[in-house]
Image (cartoon, rainbow, N blue to C red; front, side, top):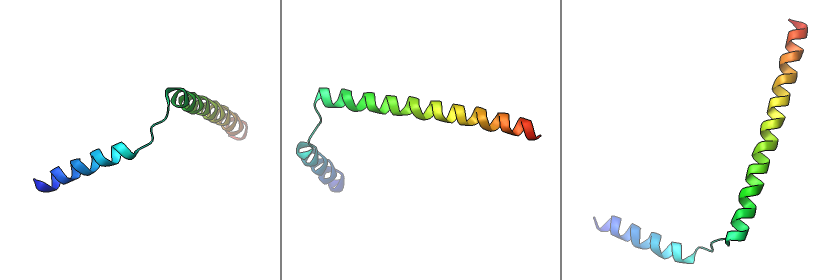
Length: 59
C-alpha cells in the first residue's frame, strides 16, 4: 500500500513540473493533427482507388 502512495505522490510532483501548452498553442496543434489526418486519408483513398483500377485492368 505504501508503494501506491509513493507512486501517487511522485505523479503529483511530476505533474507540477510539466509545462502545459496554452489554449492557443493547443488549438493550433489540434488543427495540424486534423489537417494531417485528412491529407493522409485522402492520399490513401486515391492510392486505393488507383491500385484497384490497375488491378482491374490486368485481371
